[in-house]
Length: 83
Image (cartoon, rainbow, N blue to C red; front, side, top):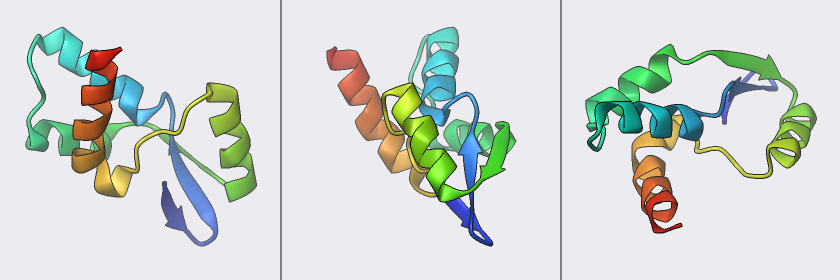
């Protein structure tokens, strides 16, 4: 998650969920430019790190890091396609 003055910028819904949905809509893998554009335009909530940790626990998974979204998305999509 991106940090700003002690707050976490937390994508809602999760960035991995948004990317997966968009990829399914397109019917093909997203390009790096598309992933960056989606990351830059997704809704986020600024929250303290302890609240973000509770949100992660409620979701049941960790989201991908927006600052490293392309590489983490490549890993996440491989894992999602295998399951």
